Image (cartoon, rainbow, N blue to C red; front, side, top):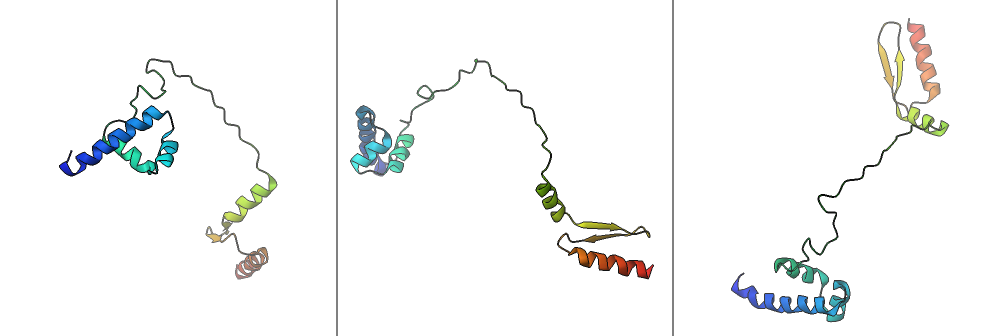
Length: 123
């Protein structure tokens, strides 16, 4: 630890010990002490005083893992959903010549009908 921070480290070590002895949460103790909680947590981690795995509740490594069976059920789309999907997909016209005409879904049906009539007149 650098010489410049050793004084700060001792101050924070005492503060952390005071908080632990108080029985208050970090947030409550910091609020009452007029200290920022993020600084408290920074120094607690830097000084190695954070609660270790022994303080945290965790599943023992040798405990069996419980699995749950999940079944996916396909629900039929509502008429509105089908209409929305169709509105997003481009319109594909397959011509007798083997060519395919791809039109934007936003194209009005009246325009599509006019286009089809024009193509039929050309044939």
